[in-house]
Length: 254
Image 1 (tube, rainbow, N blue to C red):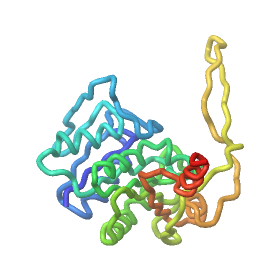
Image 2: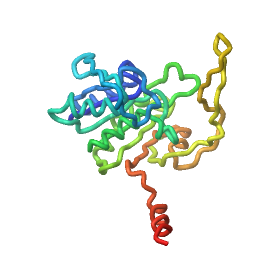
Image 3: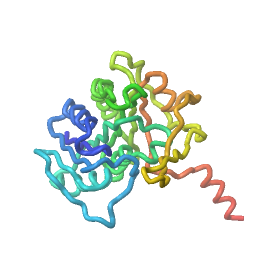
C-alpha cells in the first residue's frame, strides 16, 4: 500500500512526523509531501497565480511552496505519477479541527483533495489545552492512529467521502473510546475581533475566540472531545442540501 502524508502546519511540523510514523505502521511505501511553510486556515485553496516550487528534503520527503491542496495534486500528478497513492493521510494537525474548523482547515482540505482525486483520505488532528498549547502532546494520535486508520480502511470509504479524525487532549491510556460523530457547531457569540496597537500606535486586529466554556451537543465532534473520546466524522464532498433542493424545485415550478 502506497501512502501519501501531507499537512497544513508545514514540512517541519512535529505532527507531520507523527503522521508519517502512523503511516509506516501500516506500510513501508510512505511518501511525505507538505507545504514549505505554515498554511493553517487556507482551506481548500489552490495556487493559481503563482508557480509551485518543489524541494526534495530527503528520500521520499518533499516540500512544496503552496497549499495542502497544491501538495496533494503535486504528489499525485507529478511526484507519484508512476503509481498514485492508495491512501492520503493529512495531519497530524496541531490543534483540533472540529465544527466550523472543517471549512477553514487546510488539514481537512488535504484529505478533501485526495478524495476529489479518487483516493481514500483521512484527516488527523490532535487537540490541546491551555496548558499544552506551546507543546501539544501527540501521544494519543500516535498510539491510537494506526488502529483508527486500519479500521477505516478495512471498512472501506465510499467514493466522495473522507473521514475527519480528532484525538482528545489526553494521554493514550486516558482515552475514553472512539465515537462516530457529526460535525458540531460552536456558539458564534464566542467569535470576536481582538484590537491592538503597534509601537507607533497604529491599530491592528486578530480574529479570536473567547476562552470560556459552552455547551456542546451530544453526538457532535465537540462533545466527543470534551468527553475524552476520539472523534471520527465522515464528511461528504457533495454539499448539496437535498431537502432544500426539493423545496426550491417546487417553488421555481410555480
